[in-house]
Image (cartoon, rainbow, N blue to C red; front, side, top):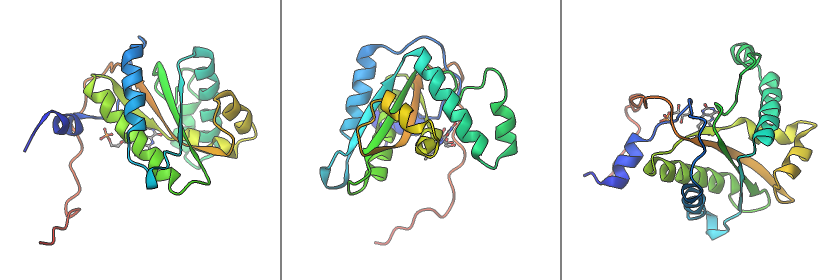
Length: 187
Ligand SMILES: Cc1cc2nc3c(=O)[nH]c(=O)nc-3n(C[C@H](O)[C@H](O)[C@H](O)COP(=O)(O)O)c2cc1C
């Protein structure tokens, strides 16, 4: 079976080259609303969405992402990070940071579903996206709390993920083959 929703799901790919132009406010509203309509454990909706489009703040976030990557034991990544124009979120014009109430029931899952839902909403509107993971390590950095304050992450919340959004400047690649044997059907 096939319909427009399924086509969006199958055709969405992570985008890692973005055009500099900003996405329309109406599209942003729809994407963030879609995230808020994701399922959540016992409907706690324990999330907060911080949309960052300010260039200086994006640059500051990138600086902290670099610090996170430099802490990881990955020499190849550390080499890439040193490049002058390195951007952890591929110079996307919009970054949506999803934080969750750490005392809630299932915040990590809820925030991941919110991000996944926003990626699909974006794809349905012709907007590219990519999960950017480094931000969830901000709380391990000395500068982390100050940045989370700047991002207006609510007290007691932690960052579970973020998404880069913008118009794709790349041909979308075909999906990698799906792993075999990943499905068991018991009838
Ligand atoms: C939890 C999670 C973390 C990810 N972190 C990153 C990341 O930090 N940077 C990045 O470029 N892609 C990241 N990705 C994107 C994956 O690499 C991508 O989804 C995967 O390769 C499949 O490709 P597709 O999204 O095009 O289908 C992440 C995806 C998930 C689900």
